[in-house]
Image: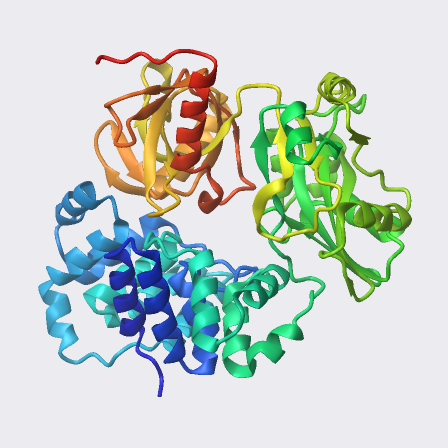
Length: 564
């Protein structure tokens, strides 16, 4: 029997009401056990705030401005009700639920409604994503309006959360993996490994439900289906990296570029960004380079694409991002912003899964199959002074710093750990999300140019403001940012806007200090945006826990001021 979408929404309400992780896992387990097989992947994706599996290239392409106009239209409620609730909760979904509950029009329609099902919501989302061409905007709006018109208040809350990709129940992928393991009696380690290989826990849940443990053993890499990249933690310097890696490690240049995943099958090449977006058409010279040089018949490799000037020196990251976003005039852009590719890892080659092999072995495979494509500059060292000299060489060449990779480390897709470490010889920057903005003064009076920056709470998913800045962006970038923020606006006022937390920026600062001004009790001093992180999703932003760690670490070298 089809599962009502309301059951998924009610699960969301229960998850939102608790911080107990074991209870969350139990709630998820019970829900998964009662799903039909064909509902499992859609349900898991939507519980995690995604309309489709992580690897799926389809997007809804619906702005908050469009969504809010539809909600106003079908409820007939004064928008001040929404902004009042949003001011209290900071949650778009909760505010949507409230105005649906206050809508007389909705109450009359509800008498004649038939329940939405999980499968039906997924079909609607697919139709919205696949609508294109002339008149597509109007057609999308009709589809969204039809879907929300069928939804009860609690269902509307979670439909909207899926649209904006902000679930905020605290039920993250790690807890979902535990729920899948428990629901279908499959060892957690097997679930986690299958999730790493597929890059999507929804697909793993579906296979575990229908085929059990044996089904998970059959899972392998699929060329042209991107997987989450292995991630690194920050290290204070080369000495710490050597200590963490038992006295010997592989240092590689950390380029100021964009990470790419290259998939090859015969003559066919596809390139995916760090966010698993297909950027093949934007990087024709990289496609050609891979096609001419990679020796493997089939493979999945990783590299870094760097934009360079006429002398071959790296140029700032934002220029590279223009190439990634471009869909027209690519040939001219390739002349203006030439690219270089450096390979640094291989996950899969000619039918062989390599992620369980050591870093050293994978590097050897990469050397044998890279052809004329250079690999990242590398030094295997056990001496701090030698490593410091290598770091200086990287910085002198215009790069960001070093990566340190444990020699025996396997490749763990989508996992952040100490097997890989980042070393940047500056106060470590933070990737933060813009949650609000104010209009500037003087010549900036018409631009949203003062930005409130927030870190993500790893436990709740909530974004907590840690500072504000008007520094770092060019006039052209501010104009572009203003346009984007207006489309994401939730709560406008004459001088400011609150926005859907979507845009990630890299932020430099002088220190982190105590501040009663913000809920987190911390604030960045002299914050300035150093680049717009188009390659990062908001869930990849730095956590408030990391901000707190950096704050505490400051007192290793200086005293604390107290009022006691």
